[in-house]
Image (cartoon, rainbow, N blue to C red):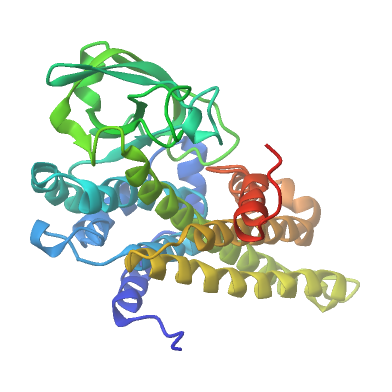
Length: 393
């Protein structure tokens, strides 16, 4: 058993760290305050080929896997971006490149993967609905077949990155949930050209005000009689659940990586402050009430990292990884919240000042415990699917 990261992942770690060294905590705070995408970092990632890590080499990418994407996300997050890094590596390299590399048609791969690798094209993912959040199989957005097209009508919510995306991976029902047997049947994933749909007036969106992660807007999306070519189906009609799980598991793994990096930066700023801040003639870090919680956070970060890398390793080998992805997401999000909360307590009253990064780190850490899946549902999966306990619903 070898716990050493492969050289491919170490090279990603070094390359991302070199870029991040030029962008400090103040930079990320400005992006959050101004609610703007980190254009400078994105441009450097694109120029260096880091956006195409998971794109096969024949399409101009790095030919790497989810492990390398997770390492990139963690490194970027730990540099100071925290929750903002999730969107950088989930939206296009994760949702777009990984999904199309595995499930795209030859035409879809040939046309889109080279441009996803360079950052010329960007993607977003639309699953969640107002009445179907954690219950993904209960979505009602419907795609009706009409010759060589599907006509789509419905509403999505918490769809991040629509403003920048050229393509949306849209999860629809082609068999109503009440008629599908089993309920996982009847899902179809469609590729939607966002600018064309917006120009035709068939897709509109409205940004949702958020407490954090404002480098990328999240939106409510309205779809009204949108026509999508049947050639834009990703995978097979009615069998979209197979595609969906290969989207959701990487999403959880990459968001776990982002949370883990957020935990690292929160711990780092807390430790630095605990060393420098003196009260009653000594650094506050000498007090066990400060030191021990930070030491606990360090232990939880290391444990979460082991599961994160294992989950990504399993996915790259096309082995079942749902349980590991859920555990990685659960433990990394908890570590991020505890790290940010203890950093806040370490700073004391000064943490409330936006001159310091702690408030941003706290807001970014909190979302990880409810999105993209709640902590309670992760625990429910472990209880029922792993331990075999009776279902509660």
